Every structure is written in C-alpha cells, then in structure tokens.
Amino acid sequence: MTKATMDNFLKNGKGLLLAYDQGFEHGPSTDFNEKNIDPNYVLDIAVKGQFTGVVLHKGIAEKYYNSKIPLIIKLNGKTSLPKGEPISSQVCSVEEAISLGAKGVGYTIYLGSANENIMLQEFGEIQENQVLRRPDKFQMGCKSSWPRESLHVRWPKGSD
Image 1 (cartoon, rainbow, N blue to C red):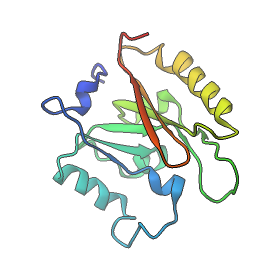
Image 2: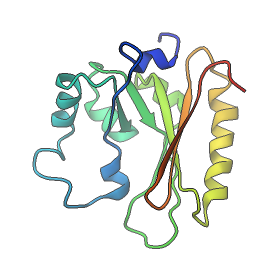
Image 3: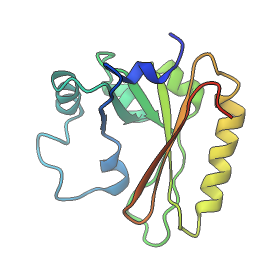
Image 4: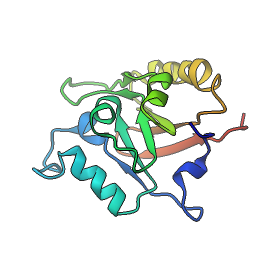
C-alpha cells in the first residue's frame, strides 16, 4: 500500500468524492431507482465521471470494489429503521479497510444527537488505537451531520 496522503484523492489540487454510503444510512428513499441501487453502476459512474475517490461501506467494498478509483471505507454506520436519536457504531476496523484496498477511512458523528458523546468517544478511540499507529498508511476524516448540516474535518498526516 502506498503512503496515505490527501494527494491520493486529488487531481490538480482538487477532489471530488462519490459517496455511496448514504443509502445504507438514510434509505430506503425515493432517491434510489433500479439503476442507482446497483453498486457496479455507481462505481462505473465514479470512473467515467473522473471522481477522485469513492466512499463505500465494508460490505459493498468486499463484493463490488474494483480498484479503478481510490477507496475510502466508512468505518461506522446505522440504518434509518429505528426511530429516535441517531447512533452510528463502528462496523469496520482500520485493518479491514486497509485489507480492502482503502486509501482512507471515514466516520460520521451526528452532532447534537443524544448519542454524540458515544460516537465522539468511539471516534477518538479509533483514531488513537487504529489510525495513529499506522501514520505511514492512513489518514482519517470525520463527517458530522445532524440534522441536515454537514461539517467535514480531516486530520492530515503530521497535524496534532
């Protein structure tokens, strides 16, 4: 595996990621149809559309990832089936992500949720115990959203 930097996801200093983890967390919805529920179709769009990376959950990556575009594995997830305050728990380790060919990992925290402290603690433990021990291989980003706003944070190699 090559050294992990944000350069893995940039072309000419710019990046465009195709996130295909949303259906798992927010579906089922009317946003999905016969074509875009097919991971092969979505990965083909990512390649043909010259995206600089794709974000997948572990199970989709295990079955469909084709190494034609840099991969970010989403380490945690939830479904929309239970009602109430969201909590997105870890479902994949950094080691598993590396073994699937990921060049980066992501983690979602629902800020403002009654469960935000649980997710923040888990995120910190993942970063400390799994990511920081592999600085030659990995960077970790966090996507925070609740209820509909997003904040993207990344910790480049060498930052505190």
